Image 1: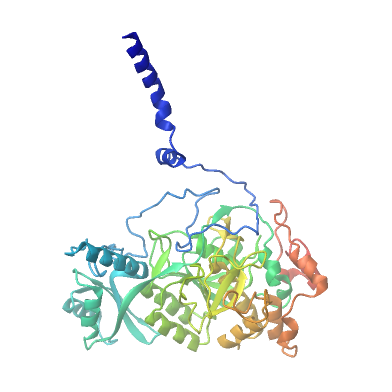
Image 2 (image 1 turned 180 degrees about the horizontal axis):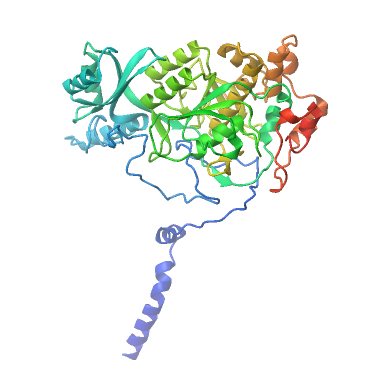
Amino acid sequence: MKTRRAALALTIAALPIGYFDGSPVHAQSLIRSPNINIGSRIPSINPTVTPRINPNIADRAVTGIGRTIPNLRTNPACGYAYRDSDGGCSGQPVSSGDGGGSGSSSGKSKNNGQRRNTQLTALNLRTIANQMVAEIDGSLSEAQTDQLARRHGLVRIESRNFPLLGATIGLFRITDRRSIVTVSRELAADASVRSVQPNFRYFLRGQNAVLTEGDPAQYAIAKLRLPLAHTLAHGTNVTVAVIDSGIDVKHPEFAHAIAESYDALGSKEGPHAHSTGIAGAIVAHARLMGSAPAARILAIRAFGAAPNGAESTTFVVLKGLDYAAAHGAQIVNMSFAGPKDALMERAIAATAGKGIVMVAAAGNAGPKSPPLYPAANASVIAVSATDAQDRLFAAANRGGHIAISAPGVDIFLPAPDEKYQMTSGTSFSAAYISGLAALMLECNPALKPGEVRAILMNTARDLGSPGRDDMFGAEEADAFAAVSAVTVPAVPIAAVSGAPAAENVQHLQDVPATRALNQPAGAVASEKSAVGDANRPGAQ
């Protein structure tokens, strides 16, 4: 009996040790507490390290300083990107064999059900379930449009005239379990309908941002030769439309730079890190320097919160483009991407026909991704991203449509609530190029979009073998060479497309990684009396 009791006691004493002494994987499955490290208030920039990213996820704002918790997910009841005019959430992804209804599919075959679910997943990534966009007879009243919708088992969410397209477009929702293919075919056969298509999704093309504070040197300024370019132009009297999420228009970096604001979503969301960073890359002029610090911004909110980040749709982006064209935009920055979209193609063609320069992010879906739109449209300047060592951003899309590259890795930019962020993505490269186009249009407002593209590409700085390629396009932009080609037409473009003069190379590229928080803010290059002054720390 004593022996059995002793054995039992030893067994009980050993239980806790045996329970926790498993493999590392097993232990991690038991303890899921995140390890949060609070970073320094001054960012440490290591341009040789490529950030680890998921290129299939759109930019998400980080609400504080430090690391994010990778497994933490939020699921808002209904984001503005999916909300109907009546406040409903019917546009959110649903489970259906063909994407046309709600609820789960009830196929007879398990394999057929799996195939339908796979097709649904792909469809939901590209379109808003149960919604379609149609061009309708412009003479129809709202009541008649509602009657048209009811005849086909639809609800009209919104309809409006788009002067840019010269067309009336309606957004409709399917009210039953019919497939979008079936309903589209029936609706297109109606005499009052000109065309029908899905309501495609669009995603912002940035990466996770880390908020911080301070005034470190911006390596992108030296790479683009902005201090020299700013001795010639600042983007004065040029209007750049930013179709994005909500910009923090009260940020000190944007003082007197916001011409107008328009919310195509009618949302109540606050400012977003992505759009605030985009605007900063173009017009920042306090502690930081944008590529066109004197330009004006049309702040157009077309992207709202959604389960997978900020998203928008065909119909909402169309409203943004229509507003930009009607309110004097000379340049439109589109740091978002999606599938090829017939209505968007029409809108871009109409925008280009008005002589408006369009710039778009190439995308962050990696080298195996197909071309993304609107960047892949021939009328748009597609921009890829490079890092401080002139290497291609690992997640950047490739392709024959890439026109040019600009810094887009570890970019220091404004963030909401008077904060700053370190972020990466082709989004921010596109914003820098939009600013360069503004410098060129200040010098010559008569430049056509094709001429802007050609000058940017012909004056680019080769990073590898001469000529364009599918990775960098025409290589990295050179702001000074591009503006010089506009302001001094007698100088051949080839003469200003090479490397900077020897006496300027050392000063322009040896930029310190950080700067003291209490150091005076850098002055805009327009205040410098000579090219050499642009090499002072304040200008850098």
